[in-house]
Image (cartoon, rainbow, N blue to C red; front, side):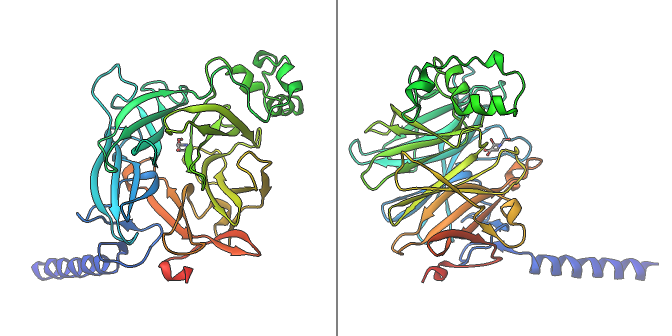
Length: 381
Ligand code: DGJ
């Protein structure tokens, strides 16, 4: 009996060793990306920067993202910052923006703080952090954007305010006729009917929220070649995307904004520009569950935006390889090299969510995404 026990123990140890040795994770000193695997930072801990974005500053990449806890998707810590010189190996730079214990603060611990993006403003020499904010205990109803600033890239960032953009202002691409229409949400109790679609396209939700400001959920920030910055966000009950111009200091909205794909149900916008064309990849709206990505292009940020087929091809393309877009990173010192960054959410264990980074490839000038188990930056050469 004792012998059998000993043998079982030896076998278990052998098995544990084998599993450990074959387990894939992207660890320090790695020089490749392994989409979907654990991604270890300099302290041998899985990177905790979800729904994130990347800024290049002082010759380094800075990755900002949501800190996720083990048991809740609410913000218990805040926005994390990591830095890297090669995109493979990341150093934990700590908390860039911390949630607070003051119950009266918009960013009180337990609020929902998602999709942080940082940009640098050359005029003010300040780093500006924008994020989607939901007030604690109010589900996703507040639909606000939040802004914080810092003089140092890694922070600490000082929270300025949260709000709904552009109250009292009609979109730039809304016709005079649409502005004059009387559209009352109470008259459209039934969604997804042809009348309802038409009313949404004509601005039913824009009008509903005209005085409070437009709803602002999933978001990104894009700084164009001429230094103008734009806030791109899921608005109008997640039915319609909006693109809004930011003020010169990148700390507010100018009042100029457009609507894109009314009633198209897009979120998770990510954008890049190549050869004078803006490409935007989004997802559908299925909560934490993956769905098929969508893609749009335009020659002007102000549209018109044209929708293309799903940019993903191959196995699991209809689920964006079980992920959801968050950012598109132009790789430094490489021409036309863009990395599609996405999240594979794990809402039952939020901190375990994985990063799906894939190179954007082009066929006849049109972007496409294909799964890769493992890849490195030489794919761009
Ligand atoms: C999908 C969004 O893209 C995420 O950022 C998050 O808000 C979840 N929905 C919440 O269900």
